Image 1: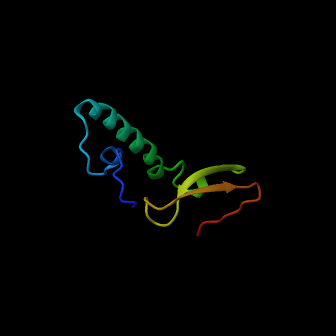
Image 2: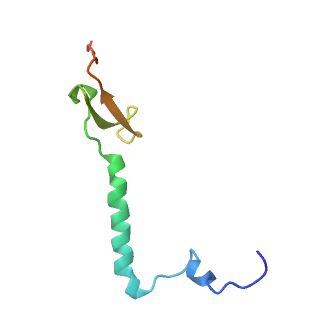
Image 3: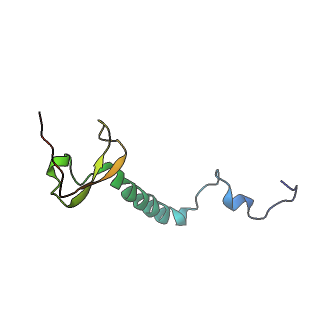
Length: 83
């Protein structure tokens, strides 16, 4: 932006090629990131009726299994009748 060459520009370039010695560490980091992301694909329960009273769980919102995760709590006065 200032017209001055930055000595770190090549290191921070998104198009840089990985060094062969860093590939195992890069793969390990990518696997770790994917394992952390997988929490968004899992739920604690699939139906609100399976949550005990005075307890909470994580469910997916909407009709899709890939809906946004939502924290749900069922208090002591919860009543629901299925039709």
